Image 1 (tube, rainbow, N blue to C red):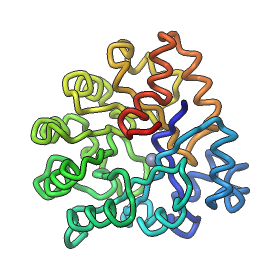
Image 2: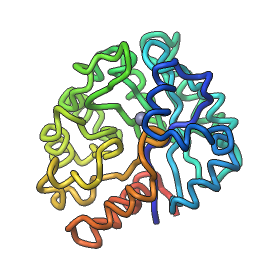
Image 3: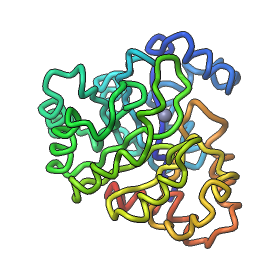
Image 4: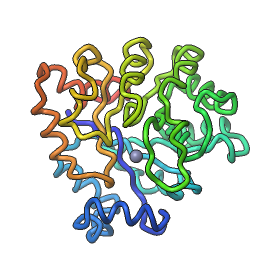
Length: 272
Ligand SMILES: [Zn+2]
């Protein structure tokens, strides 16, 4: 089973010009055919062709840096598509009642997780302003994914991406599953690896990292075999299929590769 834990959807008009420019430069062919793929049927077909069985689809409420792909858009796009697993985006600073809104999105709109963007929305992920959201997510029994590591878009502040800031959250919310998106990309691989090993409730998601380099970033990856989650960060990177093949080619136990590519995610999300 293959689960892609990190997919963005949206329309060109949802993103700032520099974000569109980034997508275009990385994958011009995809960008030219964007409208054919960026609809519920198109994406479902595309992902299946790439070998993906389930995909986590992320809303993104980051008006300062990238743009706004609203929870409503994600909900409507994914409705009725069993392979799509929706994660909501709530900005704890600008949302009036963040935890009430999270409860509504989960209970009424069927969202299965929350994505936080501290580097894009500019706060420390262990700031008390975020705690009501963690509290609510823990009681709802949903995981929280937090962007960690580098962010290249204008207006983002990388200092908020240190995974070590999640140490507080992991300890204060022992029943909350915390997913470190990009596993500390660029600056903090050691910290991300250490936290995932130390805390039962912390996971490493490796999207945005070339799979070929995974053992260079995490030489003891096998020790965290139950904690690593595959993701592509599509449409920002090369083909998902190539990334899957690159994971399969790594000199790791077969069982570890199966866990990374889908079994860990299936367990975390309760997929059958
Ligand atoms: Zn992303």
